[in-house]
Every structure is written in structure tokens, then in C-alpha cells.
Length: 323
Image 1: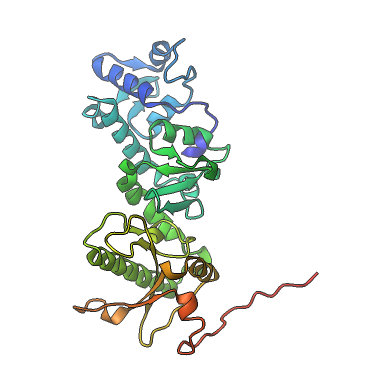
Image 2: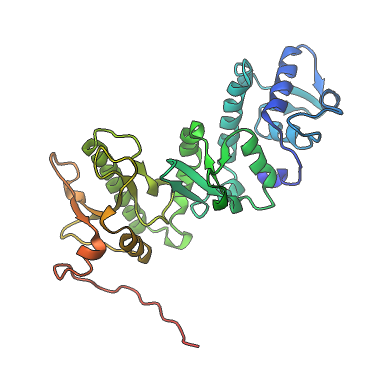
């Protein structure tokens, strides 16, 4: 769908659609035509725009309106109950948009794991500006106009943050696809799928463990749910009195004797964060037992890599030709 829309200058704004839908609704006994809509907005400036070339097509594609073969336009009944305020209309419009776009390949290329990360300072999902490129600049503007995304409070990062009002919608429509695509096409084998399930179960356990340890303190975030590039899975707090996140937790699941695989990025982040980095080792066989507590190792870069009690094996070498 996004591919069909990318050639248009303006996909619409809340003010434009609110007026359009209310006009169609108030005159429900009169058949509106595309030409009538063009007359309604002719020579007008709405939300700073004077060109409305992609608006009708977008509304038609997400099935809020139905454009008949003869050019007549019908308003979908589902939107009518949300026309009491522009904010209500916006929420329904965005929900409808995301539910339609969850089947769109280009949409998921924009909102992919390589473009999504988690900001632990603002407790927000963030997306790279480069994810949209020039090709989908009009879609980016639509999301900005509907306040789905906002410019990051630190502009030099060149990122946007997701409006928390739409987080549940994001988790419902976008997040499942992000999780599905985290495993590469060539690695979609039963064993790795099971390992991912084990990993997520362990992360959920630790998330609940931390919430219980800290009396449900606000701001404990499951970072790995959105990004696998941070070098840790959960950002938490050392104590209930901590003002900002100061415990960064990497979760590893195992069965039998404790073991784990550590990526280079995780090792680097552990070294950088030092005493604020924790490794939680979760025994899968003990997860459902009352009173079970994970094996917690603070500063694993110091306390594991130099500890003779842990056997280290190199699984891979990077071999590069010297020039």
C-alpha cells in the first residue's frame, strides 16, 4: 500500500480528514462525488497545505471511505461514532491505518529491528529518521501530523520517538512482525525458534522478578522487546530509590549446568557499564518453582572473564587478510 502512495505530496492531516469526514457524515443523504470534495478544499490552506493529492486515495485504501466506480464517496459507518472530536477521530484513523498496514511489506521494512531501538531515558520506542528515506517522506509527515511519532528531544540523534498513546497499538500490530523477523530467513529452523522462545520466557521472568523486587517501580523496561542491539535485555534500577535506570540486565537461559553464549557487543557493553551491568542466568527447569531465584552476576566482564571457575571456549574466529 505504501508503495502506491509514495508519489503523492500530501497524505492528509487531522484537520483535513476531520472536516472531510464530518462533511460526508452531515450530508449523508446526499451522494458526494470526488469533484465535490475537490471543490470543498479548492483554493484553501488546511494545516499549512494547499495540495491534497493523496488524501482520498489513502482514506479509501484504509477503508474509512469507499470510492465507487462512478466517483461517488461513501463514509464507512465505523468512523462515524468517532467524529465528536478531532482527537477521537485521530485515534481511530491511526488504529485503522496500522491494522491495514500490518500486512504491508514496506511498512515493516520501515519499522524493522534495524531501525527500532528503545530510549531508556524517555522510556520510549525510537525510530531512525533514515528508516523513511526520501521515498517515504510523505508517510513520515503523516505520522508526524497525527502525532504518532515526535521529533526526539535530542534532535542531533536524528531519531523520532513513538507517542506513548500509540504504544499498545504498536505492540499489537508492529512488534509481532519485528520479533518474527529477528531470526534470519536462513535460520528459521525448529531449534533456533525454540531457543528464541526460551529466551523470551526467561526475559519475561526477569522482568516480573525485577518488578517484584522493586515493588512495581515505574520505568523498568523490557528493552530487548524492541531492540537486540543494546547489549542488554532489561533496564532496571539498583534500588527502589534510584532516580534513573542504573541496573542493566542481560538475560541468559540454560538447562543443566549454568552456561551461556556472549556476543561481542554484549561483552563490550558489559565492560563499559561495569558495576551497573548484571547477568541473570535462568534455569529453565526451575522457572515455575516457588522461591526460585536466578543466578545473578554483577559486572560479568570482571567477574567471569577473569574467573577460573568459568570455562571459556571460542566458538568463532574473525579471520582477515592483512594488507
